[in-house]
Amino acid sequence: MNKKRALVLFVACTALMAAPVGCSSKARAYAQEARSSYITARAVLVGVEEFPAQMETLLRSGDVSAMKEEAEELIEYIQELLPSAASAFRTVKEDAELLKGEGSDKYDPYADLLLELVSLNEQVINAYSEFIGLSNSVLQGLPYGQDPEALMPTLNYMDAVIQRIQELDTQIQRLEEEAETLYIEI
Image (tube, rainbow, N blue to C red; front, top):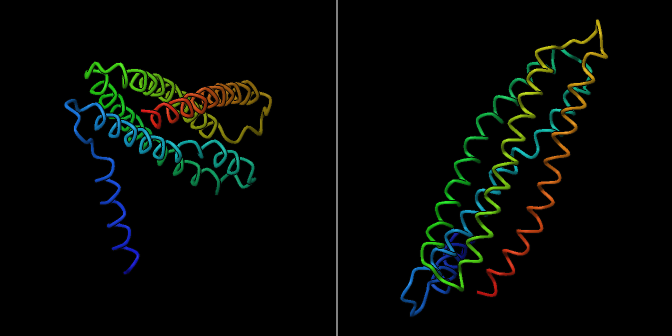
């Protein structure tokens, strides 16, 4: 059996095993959908998370003229990716609200955790948007040959934004572990 057929068979079997059996409510299906949506949304956000390191590498490359064009392309790409990430988290929120709407004591805590995770991820997206704007400003101000010290306040603020993102990521990681444990238990 080729790999493609094996994968299709695996996905079909998994879907059948995951289907709610004998439940009068749709809570189990909503929980599965919300979890799947969350995993997808986080995958979209991974591309955005790579931006600061990529931008730093470009800024340190030395050749301002060559780097500027590449950095502008990177900024444009990330600016296109941010709305996709935001949209993906809106889907998670909608799915979690559907789950919450079932009024299940068993599933409500999971829905609440997902809604909290969405809120934190939205804050991360906003912080990345701010960082991208700052990066674009730095890029437009290059070269800082006349007064390199004028760049320092912006760089310090960029560091503060990245630190805020890292703090949010720590909270997200903790809640993701809690949510996954809760999902497995229900």
